[in-house]
Structures are given as C-alpha cells and as structure tokens.
Amino acid sequence: MASFNRVILLGNVTRDPELRYISSGTAVTDIGLAVNDRRKNASGEWVEETTFVDVTLWGRTAEIAGEYVTKGSPLMIEGRLKLDTWEKDGKKNSKLRVVGERMQLLGSRSGSGGDGPRGKARPAARAGGPPTDDFTPDDYDPPRSGSEASAPMGSEDDIPF
Image (cartoon, rainbow, N blue to C red; front, top):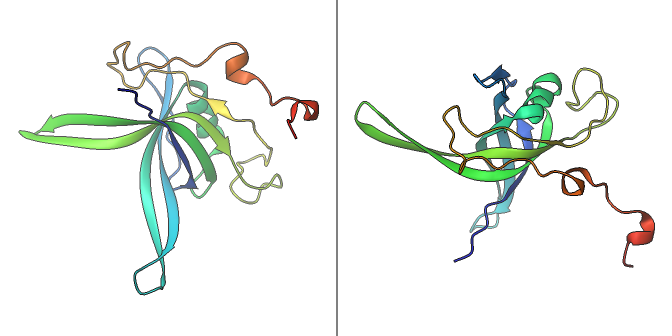
C-alpha cells in the first residue's frame, strides 16, 4: 500500500526558538506554530479556531530559525509528521509533531512583520539533520542533493501558458 506523509503549515511562531546542538554537532531547535482556521458553524456564525503545532527543525534550517525567527514571526513550514512515544511513571505517552524539512520566513522586507533583526528577505532553508539524538537510519531522511535541492524555478520561457 502506498503512503504519503507531507505537511504544509502557515502560521505564527508562539515562542522564541532555543537553538541547541546534539552530541554529533548537528543544530536542532523546537518551535511552536499557531495555525488559525476560520469557518462557519452549524448556526452560520464565523468561528475562529487555533491549532498549536510543535515543529522540530534540524541542521542549517535550525540555525537560520535561531538567528531570524522570533515570537510572532509569520512562517511557512513544510515537513512530515512524526509520532513520538515514551513511557513515564508506567504510563505510555505519545505526541504528534512535525519534522520541518523546509522553512520559509514570511513578512515584509522592511523589518516589520517578524522578518528578523535585519529586515532582510531570506531564502527557504532545508533541514538536514537526524530527527532524534538516538536516531536510526530509518528515521533519517537526508536532504536532497544536486538540482533537486536548490534548483530555482525555470525562466518565464519555461511557463507552459
């Protein structure tokens, strides 16, 4: 059976990232993302619902987040879902999180709107680290290399319409 695990989120960062490095020297940071949804309920009234999502970023992506992302920054994350399970005090726990593989900082170039301290536009960043300190090769999805990782969009001549 085929499967597909891809998540794209657009929201605001709920706390300043805390960059750290694991024993192998790989950068990692965890951020919270608030994603808002607005819909009509059964009585026709607009209801606003916020979903809070934990996101883990690795490698250079984590370093960029640590440098430019602050609480309130608008952010787009592309990644995959990962279920963490653990046992504490005899009770089994689990938590679904997103492993961010690509991050796009959003907002205006003037520095207002959560762009970071320098107000510069930044390119998308791609993660490249293992998902946990005690990872297995099955957990690790290395970054794509070559033209697949950083190929810019084609020129206007390549547009099919």
